[in-house]
Length: 208
Image (cartoon, rainbow, N blue to C red; front, side, top):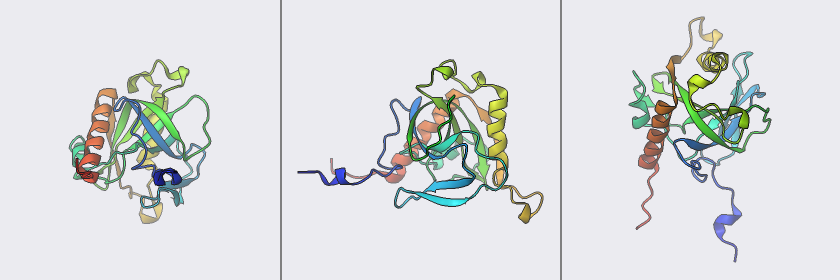
C-alpha cells in the first residue's frame, strides 16, 4: 500500500534536508536564477513559488538565489549581526556560484559554504550566505570568500545593497544596510545558528 506522504510533494522549507554535512555542505533550494527580472519567493503555506514583485532596478541577480531548508533567522542569527534587533523570521538566504549558467529554479543545489554578507533590512538580520556549487570542479580551489575574485564579491554586495531602493520614496530611501562581508568560519556559525533557530521555532513533540 502506498504511504500517504509519498503522494505529496515535500515542502521545500520544512520537508527537504538541510544538506549533506551542514554547516559546511548544505542544500540550497533555488527560487531565482541570474536571468530573472521578477523576484519569486516561496509561499510559506503551500511550498510553491509565488510572484513577489518585478526587480526594482535594472540590475539582475548575479547568482542563483534561494534558501537553506530547515533554517530560520531568529534570535541566534540576530546575535551574530552587530546592531540587529531581531532576525527576519525567514529561512536563511543563500547565493550559489556556478561556472555554467543554470536557468531553472525550483531545484535543489548542493553547495559549499565559503562566506556571506551581513545585512540589516529595516533593523532585522538578513544574512546572505555565499556558496559555490559543490560538484563544480572550477571552484575546487574556493573554500573561503577571500578565494573568490573581488569583482564577483563586490557585484553580489552591490546587488543586495541596492535591490530594495525605491526612488519613488525619495532619493535616500533604502531599507538595506550592508554591515560587511565575512569568511567561511563565520558563515558556518550563521548556518548553525539558523539551524538552531529553526529547531527552537518549529520543534515538534513526537512523543519519544
